Image: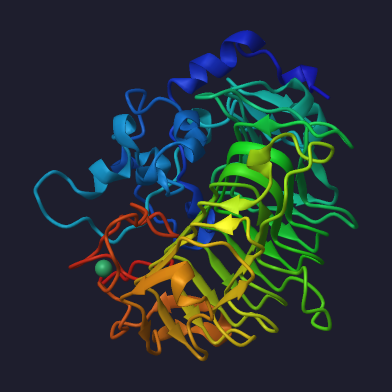
Length: 445
Ligand SMILES: [Ca+2]
């Protein structure tokens, strides 16, 4: 519900558009609170900067250049970090991860249960998430203030192309979603109906102990970025979707170790997912499970929400998953996967990329793997080159630090085509002489 005491700002209808012109997309991982330094100013996030985050965030339907959460960085919205990091003097971009934009440039709705005094004057304030979702529309950005939200959150309405609806943490704040039961975030138009919902962004949330961390039913053109999902009973991210971009998330500790199936980092059905810059570690089953299936109009809103065709799995680090390998390709309708520039380290199962009766057309290139063979895909169903069996020299994987040591063979060893322009921390790629393999771009500074 709206806290009417604080809604004295601009008329509701003016807010989203006004903000849209100022919003800087992304900056996501900054929310990994840790590394965010002090360079907000350097990023000059002024009114001149981009067209909405939205545009960028909606980019799941766009091309490869915006595979990063910092998307934005797309084309016409240039002004972001690229500029600030490359100061125009021709030097390589600096190592600094980008800073967050100020909340006033991001949030059009704020959920604040405590009545803080520093909420942006232009944002409508709510005391519960459901109230904010019910009032939000295309182009809106709902920011949750710090704290633990001990309930599931359902996004039952979508955005529009170029004007997505965003649910995210208040910039710089730690937001934990920890339902006592049920999914953390549920993206679903209505219960029980095969209906599509689209143009949504979920960003910068920590989701702990949910059934599935983020679950979708027939979602399309949506972005899940910069979230930290731990100890889901089932998968970290799962469901049916089309043109879903899963970028710069950390998903770990899913499932019950006694069950080797169904408890994956990412478990998706539907076409054209882009999975980039994620760290998927210590989950019970696979890191990424491509769950193809046949289209049934009684249960899916369209054929694009069935099968698992044309996924791009690029620059992820998938390690220490317990009972299964890094990636599974399930059923004949899983076809034409591109699996490029990933690190697969010491996962369970027999092979890193497991064929489970998949279709053909898969491309496996430029990956580093250790601890098990790369794949059991038949030669006539995939092409492979540039994959190397070597220890990637991670900083301290046992302690959850999957960055690269300074002598890692993954440094500058990646293939530039299709690599996301930013890494999991929002740092520009490449640093140094080339693209690194895995989720992190090594920084010499
Ligand atoms: Ca590099």
